[in-house]
Amino acid sequence: MHTQAPWRSKLLPLVITLAVVSVVSVALAERLAPSGSVTPKRGPLAGQPCRYGDGLHEYFYLADYTAAELESFIQGKKSSTDFMVLGVLKAIKERSHRFDGQFSKEGYEHYKELVLACLEDGKVAPTKDFCRQRAPYRIGIDIFTGKVVSEYTGMNLNGFWILEPGWAH
Image 1 (cartoon, one colour):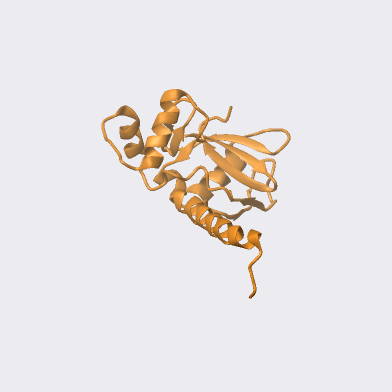
Image 2 (cartoon, rainbow, N blue to C red):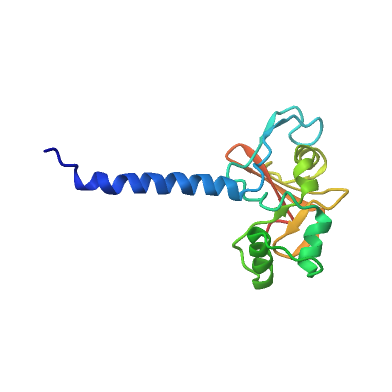
């Protein structure tokens, strides 16, 4: 009679657990981070293709909500059972850094334009890997101030521009 090695009986549950965690992690990101490429026509990076995207999707947990809805949650005028909304509200209240800034629906839908505006017209650092800009509308929650803002920060991480609502600290 053939017996199975003892480690094999433990391997299958581990593989299944890892697969479930991967699926749940992607599902928690309400929306996947926008990705693509833009070529600024002006500014320090003019004429250079710039890729954007964030493989962690960490700034988009609340991207199904408008800026007005996010503000209503923060002000307590509207309640939610969405555990991501509750988590962000708790982080704001506790001044915790468990969450990063969160894009609203408006910020998510105009992400490519926000990247381009930051690179063309924003305040770009001399190192050309950091920029700040203000959108003409509110784009998400600055996790540090707990407010819905129009300001955002762009960072070039590993060759990809990533935006975050608010002025990164």
